[in-house]
Image 1 (cartoon, rainbow, N blue to C red):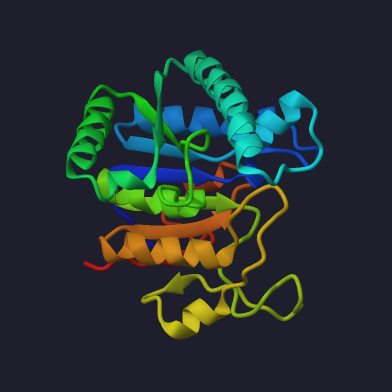
Image 2: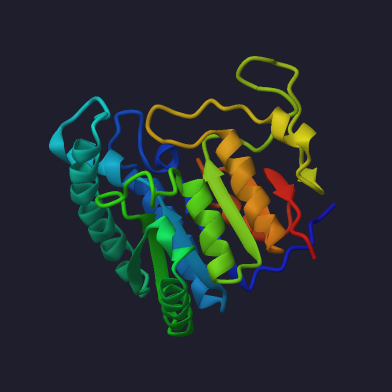
Length: 262
């Protein structure tokens, strides 16, 4: 049965594992397909925001680092290098499809500072009204524990509330929420729809993240809880083929749908 999703305003979050190969280098083919799809959605009249991880991963690749650094100063410096490279690539690819992009780097204090909150909402709305695709990441180069989101799943949920999104699509290296960890149990079943995020649903989430990113299923469920409480539908799906975005917005049962509170 088809899902009935409203999708006038869509936030799409892509994780590091979706954007890169196992080598840590950018998957340019996937990035190109993703950009073309977002440009096409924009052409169709939808308002689309992209939340993109990958700054530290791209920075590591550019600097020839095989192991993710542990110190804050190293991660911040590498993120600064990687974010510059990442946006340069996005700008180049999107321009091939006639789409203008804008970089927005956020820290968590936009939640607590009323003036900053209003300013960023106005910025998002102005960009979207002009047909520009905002590309959002955490400002890793200056973030400290007190003002950092910690993962881009949480950031994507916040962005969904800022732009009053109808749908948040979280693309990762997992197919959705299973009733048990599919990496450990062969009989694990994918949940297609979650009406409400209960304690039982939260217990199903596995905390295992990937080496290249910071978010596991627990952070995705937490993000879904935040976004659905604001009325936004959330879909967690596998991003290995970005064409699933079309499938999801067409109402096909791809991934796990967490229904927004109406």
